[in-house]
Length: 67
Image (cartoon, rainbow, N blue to C red):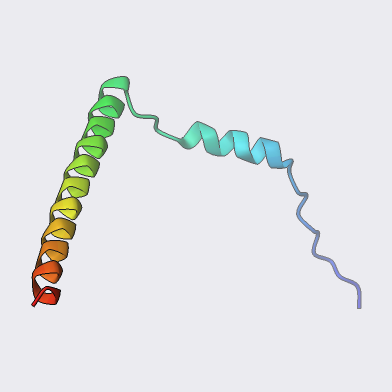
C-alpha cells in the first residue's frame, strides 16, 4: 500500500512568529499608562495591607506569649 497523502510543508518558525505578531492589538500609550498606574497603586495598597496584618498578628502574638 502506498501513502497518497502529502505531508504538509513546514513553514519557517520566524514567518509564523511574524504572522502572529501582526495579529496582536497593541494598547495605546494612554491605556498602557493607566493600566501601569493601576498595577503600581494596587501593589502598594496590598503591600500596606499585608504590613498592617503582619503588625497586628505580631502584636497579638507578643501579648499572648508574654503572659
